[in-house]
Image (tube, rainbow, N blue to C red; front, top):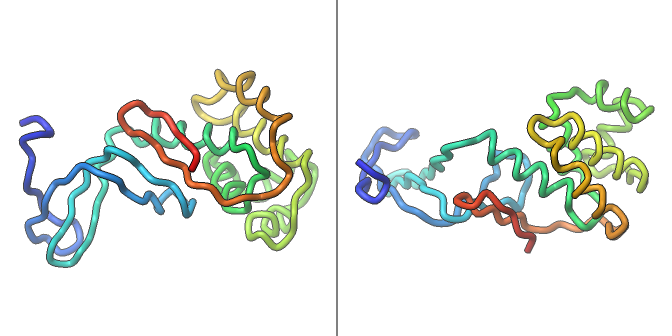
Length: 170
């Protein structure tokens, strides 16, 4: 059975019959507020309203998102710093040791309680690219975007085309 033939599934929440649908899905599970997956299959339950995305390659999707965050043309927000730290599978202590600071400072940055500097912003991005699984090939391309980073944090939407594995900012 190919994807076009699937019309019914089972809800992971209530176990009742659910419908397959291709469309847009807000991917809050990644830890960022404004990530949307485009052209993604979902299983939608008409009974309990649960929606489950069908993500064929989570690792590849997270790589695309990590690169998009590292390329963001604005200063990183706290949730984006947290996302990159978690992508690196680091604790606050571990990231702090790379940045020459302490875990309480990292926590303040991640919770938007304290602004981080421009140099820390770029170093976090560079660390993510150098140490992140599958990202090192993008270091040069992303580093070339650093001079264009606007020094104001701004919330943007990440719109990921799941078929082409590309991201656009909105």
